[in-house]
Image (tube, rainbow, N blue to C red):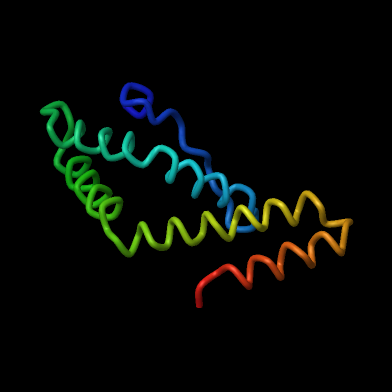
Length: 108
């Protein structure tokens, strides 16, 4: 169903691997409208059972929630910085500049 609505596949996650969580956040953010379309298609289709339709309704409510979107955008911004730091971990001065810039530009 995800492929049919253009959302593709979602990456699996592991509780101890930041990069998997980062990829999941980026995927949900970049495929937000396709995910909504997928869950709306499920709700409108008679071929799905009640549990699937109820779960889809919950996902739609979550994806449309302003709190969820705020957290999704916030985590995406944080994970982008973490990804940069992980790639440049051996360059201490570069990492320090990124952290300082991030803390100065992030609203509190």
